[in-house]
Length: 224
Image (cartoon, rainbow, N blue to C red; front, top):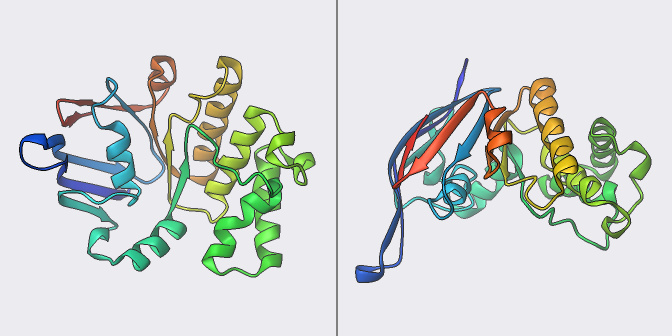
């Protein structure tokens, strides 16, 4: 498989002096195009911190994250935001949909931020919403959708620009078990169809066990 992301000697600390907390302590990882990976570990070990750094939402204290051999953290904030918008999709535990906009409009947002014409953005959003099973819910606002449907909109929004990587932080954590399984199955199916690399943080051992690769975070180190 093609190497997509290389993490080299990654450290992340919070605070200073006596209050300094070292969360990530020299992590080296490689992620490949199209693979499915679960990041697991006890609460507070830095799973979300690692995911945020992979997604360029946070910067490491030291170390490198290479995308296609390119160190993304040499980019300034504007350049990094553009890279993130185009190359990375995010799905969080809470859907973070804008309540005043319908499913189609919420899904279009990354396209409009990217600078795409509204007509093309709308067509892309409708296509991906249809793919995730929401063809008949395009005009519904978040308050008119079930929890599972809201998360499906969030997944569609994350994939509308066809990023190479999808980062999911406890994507089923706010859903009942049946709905959560359905959303997880959708993520796996989209990984297969789109060949998008899926990296998922989860506390759910059942879901983690269904991922071909598991990375365990323990004492600031990563194995797997």
